Image (cartoon, helix red, strand yellow):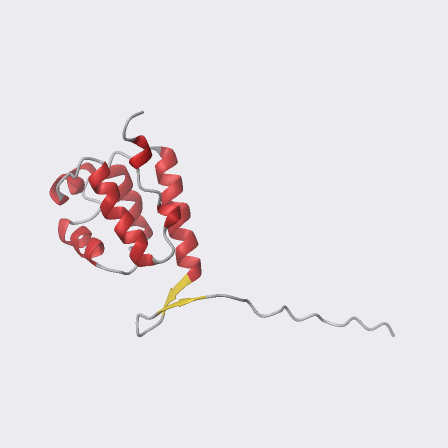
Length: 119
């Protein structure tokens, strides 16, 4: 199908800023509906100003907003699964500290092994 290969892949995002950029590209791929049209399609699941702020940010938007956004962009079940999976992967990889600094977890500490003694 022509144009299908141009569909942005959220799994390519390595950080929240890239994820948001892919959301912008997904909106364009969907025909660039206005924010108000997206709100209407999402049955008012979010406000136009909320979406606008989310797409200007470099922070990961709330999952509920992402889900409603994908549906509003005429996404299918597979699109929704892909976007949710990408969101979860990034959310688990990046944690926002009080200073809003993103931290990538590169290694987890080794689990403690309890010694079992026989007596």
